[in-house]
Image (tube, rainbow, N blue to C red; front, side, top):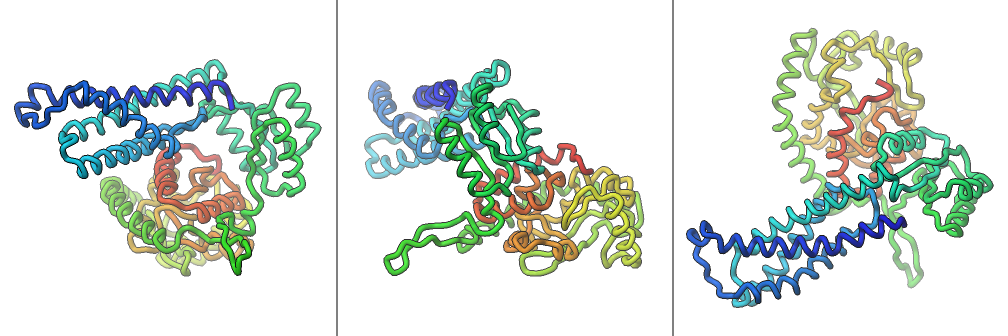
Amino acid sequence: MKKSELFFGALLVPVDYLMIVLASIIAWGLRFSTGVTEIKPVMFDIPFSKYFQWVLIITPIFLLIFALAGLYSMKTTRNFLRELGLIVLSMSAGVGLIIITIFLNPDWFSSRFVIISGWLIGIFLVSIARYLVNFIQKLMLVYWGIGVHRLMLIGKNKFKDILYEEFKLHPELGYEVISQEEKIDLESLRFLRKTKGIDEIFVADPEVTMLELRNVSDFCHRNRIDLKFVPAILQSVSTNFELSRVLDEPVIVIKNTPLEGWGKIAKRIFDIVGSLFGLILAAPIMLLTAIVIKLDSRGPVIFKNERVGHKGNFNLYKFRYMKLEYCVGEQNPNMQKALDFEKQLIKTHSVRRGPLYKIKNDPRKTRVGRIIEPLSIDELPQLWNVLKGDMSLVGPRPHQPREVEKYEEWQKRTLSIKPGVTGLAQISGRSDLNFSDEARLDIYYIENWSIWLDIQIIFKTFFILFKKRENN
């Protein structure tokens, strides 16, 4: 842990305390402002000195709730948007406790205006103050290197390269890659620690053996270095487990996914609300897209493409971005000819290997298709698939039957839940990831699903859409 991280992490405690106290004072002042008192006369007679004493006593309870919510993380790379959500929830929980207390003892305090305005102002002030602290911390990180983590990357796959590029392009993430190695070499680790210093080691290759991981783990423990790695266990068994007992013997129960029971119900409700909201929000774009597709080339505006879901095959809806004679689907009367041409293009132009293909500079696209496909506008009709129940907003991307036939056995795990319009793999590399890495990310999502994870993925998807893909 860097000294700057300790300093700024500890600084948040008094900053939050002062902001909550300040919010309480402002709320009191607003209640006694001329405009408010004229509309609603003051009905309580607690003097400000007494009120202020109670504020000083109650505020530490809010800080305790903040701590339980994880708002006092010492990391440089705190996510402001995630913190904002936690601030709203924590402030709401604290105000909820106050309201319950007042309900049990109405004589204690009865100003709903002070409570509600203090809650809203508190959220605003705490958020602004934390943003400024985080901004100063990242400013020192980017321009003076204060708090930067010296990172060593190990691996020989695409994921390692993506990590390197991300850390290089975004210094605000707090990492300086001091070395990239294809395999674990303890002598190289010792040399780098002495010459440059190592704060973290990231083993980005799940193919490393348990013996190698144990050796590098021992090295990190001895030298107080943080170790992160992509576990090979993702290829075989679930990492989502719980401890239980059978006949008084301790056992480990491997769980498939949190998407069971209430989790499944919550996700379906989230999908229905989200897809309806998305369809309403995207309606103008979808209408304009439909018009320009119709004017640009002959054929249906919406094209159905057969995909494999968690319960078999279904028709996935997309805006047609190819010329009709090249579309592979039942809506094309010359589908076999289009399929033969596609197979030829895969052999000569595909930039991906494995079950999936990606044709670079695809000659089959229409003029409109060259615009809407890179921005994923062609995928907006899939919101209707979500509403129908064929798909989810977030999940593994659905693939064609001929692609699924080429899956390795462990990769078929991605078919155990509904496919998604977007997913963890899409925000981690879009089509630039190889399929094995994509499958591992999807399996991680299956095992660690939560509504909050879905919200994060959807939010990040909007930013990824405007990032240029290597393989487009």
